[in-house]
Image (cartoon, rainbow, N blue to C red; front, side, top):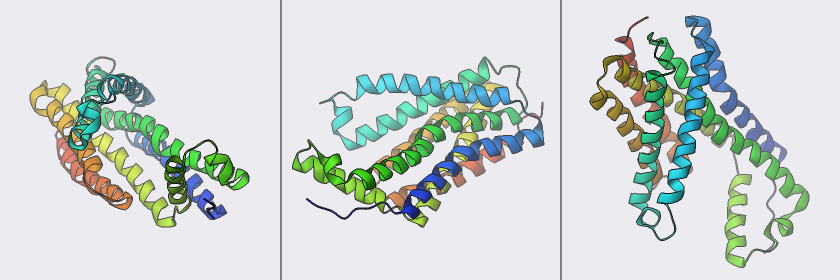
Length: 260
């Protein structure tokens, strides 16, 4: 079917700006944190690499767990719960291993914050940043090539679903850009907060309390955001309020951590 979908210049610019904001914000925050605390960039790099390792393991596990026909792939409740649990276990275990081994000599609480920025930078770059830039390129291709090129070879159902997605992408408003950027920044503070909690687990040796708390909070946040019947706007707002709640709790923990 013929459509009049078009990516305006303003829409493409909004995607580009959103991608830039989401990508550079963790770096800016890390730079400001280093300027204030003199915390090493090595901690940031370890956080970046730890997320890469966690993401790789999670990807492999997803391949085996969410096979076609599995209850993990067919039941929405089980699907989102398992997705959240995988993220919680893989990422928080990687966080713990990073503080326990390569960063074992980093006992100052400032390290937990710098680690969180590095951990988040990988996710922000791989998700919000690349997705936004991808929409810029796809939008330009759509405007230049047209609908026929994108729907070529698709059956009617697949073509209609694809067109629905393109139409939604082309309707990316200024408010959407703001919400995506705020959501991304919220994700940064969530990762910092969880890093503080796991750092507490390493410093106290109380894994049952602090590491399990981090895994539980991570799992619960991901599960609710996916399972609840929220609109895109609702999901962004949920992430923002979730970050405020976890951030405040983690700040109280941070105040009691050692300075050195």
